[in-house]
Length: 508
Picture (cartoon, rainbow, N blue to C red):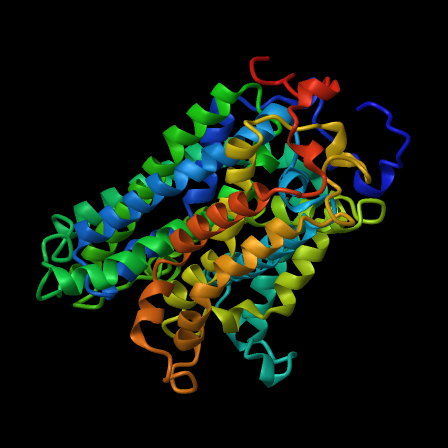
């Protein structure tokens, strides 16, 4: 980057700096493998089954998952563009619209969601290791209690959780190259395991059982749509996190074509395939287990066969959960926390902050909350992340026409300084876009306390990601176009200011 007389050190470190040509080693199959590794996990397996429990037929549930992932692929590819073109991570990309300091607002919101997901995935992976321990040594469940009863954890569960947490820390410490080879090794293995599970269900049950053929429980289209739209929002919300921080990965892409093809091939197809596997295998369980329907793959695989099968199955689930957790829930918050204090926090330190917070939220209690997965967790955080996505995309594509001043993203007093490092237009747009979903969210989490909130607000909340995305984009563009705005030079294209690095990676 060019010298501008300003101190760049306060806004950068080796983990936030633009990637060099030598670092751009990810081809299309790396991105495809990345999505296989992230999509093949326990929550994906259970996505469609949770929709069936809400009343959908199997095909309605699978279709909803497929449509949601086709929709979220669009902002995914749009936000990915800046990472591949300029070699910058998500928090640096956000500086263009939120300001060089204001970018910490969307970065921290994204990071806190990732910490929640990290804890959940680590708990699920630890549960698989606990099941593995039970298959190898039945005495694990009789170990004396060493933790306070208030935590609600047995010693065996704590050992599984702690061991899986340490495995995650190993990959955090070894950085993104370790993630790349983990995903390349895990992806084909995970697909094979899923297909073998599907074959087992087909062979053992003589077909996929009653669930694939049973109709939905809705009396009419109105009842179906009342569940479909919030469920669709939740499906988009499932990867709304990655649709923001995808530049953290595409900054290592060899070209735009590589990242676009790799993501387009893998994301919607693998999510739909694994949702189908989850439904189809679950449909066989009533036949194989005397009428008992088993939705949880950890429980199911623990009962499929003898100790050897259980050991192999739990290892497969552990690999699946690990590959998802590291890629989806560590890379982003590590960069986001690093952006908060680049001189003091690097990628490793940011990753360790994520890992520690993942324990402190006590994820075993979070996932135990009844009826919380879709309407409270997925839709709830999509009300925050949708507006951020709307602002980023409106700023980059509509306002700046994909031109950024790369040097300016890393210095104070430059084109993205706005008002002491914060862009009021972005912050106001974010707040305005979140407000319509707030009443419905309050009604959802505490219906008795907020019973006075009327149904229209609850209905609006069910479209939280879409409403937030659209409102934020429109409000941001209007505010940025107001006459007399200070700092108008930030809208001039990069090449007019000698932004030498601005276009370097579109085709190389």
